Each structure stands twice: as C-alpha cells, then as structure tokens.
Length: 348
Image (tube, rainbow, N blue to C red; front, side):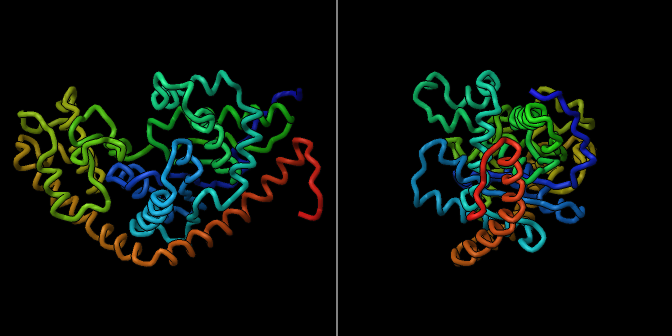
C-alpha cells in the first residue's frame, strides 16, 4: 500500500452536489432544508449539480409507474422552486451510469465495519436486517460515488446525513491513500440556515417526513393554499406564549419548530422572529405563519402543476442535464479505472 497522501482542497475547483430521493412527494422540509438553499447557491458563482437519486429509491421496492411520476414531480419541484437548468445541472441518477460504476469500485474500498455503523441503515432495517436489500446496506457507498464522481467539494446536507458524508470523506481518503494519489477531494458539508431540519407539525421531536402516515404532520409542496393554512393552524403547540428570547424555546420542540419555519420562510433569524412576536399566543402567531407559508409556497405549487402537465418537457430537461453531468463524470471515472489498473479499450 502506498504512503498516505494529504489532499489539498485548494487543488479542486469549488463544486456543489446534492441529491434528493424521488420516493414520494416533496415537503416543506425539502423546500426549506434543500430547494430554497439550492436556488440561492446559483447566485454564488459556484457550479451546482442536483440529482434525483432514483437508484437510491429502489433500495426499497418501488412501483415503477409511481417512481416515474415521483421523479418527474421532484424535477418539477426543483424547477418551480427556482432551479434554472441553464445555470445548474438537474438530472436523474440512473441516466448517468458513472454513478453505478464508481459505486461498485467504492464498494471495494469501503469496509464492512464502516457500513455496519451507519445509523440510518439500522433505523430503516430495524429487526429485519436479514431481509432488506443489499442495496440498502451499500446505500452510503453509492452516495459517496454520487458526490465524488464529480469531485464535488461541498454538499448541502441536513444533520441526519452528516454520518453518510463522513463516510464519503473516509472513502475519498482511503482511495487516495491506497493508490498514492491526490485524486478525490475531502468533501465539506454545508449545514446552514434556520430550518435545515424541519420537524413534524404533530411531533416537534421528529423530522417532517413524507413517510409519516399522517398527512397532517407535513406540508406538501402540492398542497393548495387552504390545506397549507389549515395544517399550520392545527399544528401541535403548547399553551405558553412565545418568549422574548430564544432560550425560552428550550424544551418546547413544537414552538421552536414553528419559529424556525417562520424564520426560514421570511429570511429572518429565529431571534428576530421571537423578538417580533414576544408574548404572542399561538392564536396570533399561527395565522401569521400560515399567511407567510401560503405566500411563499402557493406560486411553487401552481408552477409545479403547470410543469406536470407536460412530462415530455420535464424528461427533456432531465436528459439535457444528464448529458452535461455525464460530460463531467465520465472523464473522472475513466481516470479512476486507470488508477485502479483496469484496461480500457479504445472502442469505448
């Protein structure tokens, strides 16, 4: 084995990559924790690559027709939220085979012990670990390939994905060390904003999720204005008024969640929101939050509905994005094959 190599980050141009599973409808959590920030990143002069990770989705069984619909709906959500396919690359993972190819190589780099420690696998598999797919176990290795096949240097992630990103860093370091190269960057997480982790409207200790059996626990980007307003007005809270300082939200998860949502939608800090609504009862705060949410989300819902009327146009945008993504990924993958000793015929 070659001597360890310290990879200087300055040698890699800044590039952002992030992916979302198209395994169900997009929620307010997806918008505030991901889409809103993705749109903002377009204005920072950094190359941005956004991927609908349909290969990750099938680590648990998916109805084919529903998966196609969910992939198009997720793409519509990206576009409606403000992702510009001329400034960002937007595509679905399965159209760029380099993801799967590098994923296999990383399966041979990653260690079983690393994968076994992934808490998300333990959570999803539960007591059924012998019956889940091998793909679910190897999910973090493919995620590492998604990122590193573009030599991405930054990944916007929620707190629940930090462990997977740490594994990506471990794989990059081990690959570089094993082969004595300065090839893959050690990617950095981008965790920022007031509501990077939006919680359930019914339980402030649980993440807002499209898999929650209660539709009242989340706001879907397909919800109309009336539905959004009703869900927020019915959101679980406590009987106390809003405090005049952030410390007053300690041990009040539902109150803190609603304040964070307001802050993220308004672009203000949670401290300012608490200051502005100090002493207010939720009977006052919830209607204000509902009005703000409707104002921000209704245009997105309307545009998503328009886009979904033309699936061929969505497919065209995804195909164009896949072509651009492949143009970046394929040369990087070919270099990986060369580094690892694979013979590559010129006929390719």
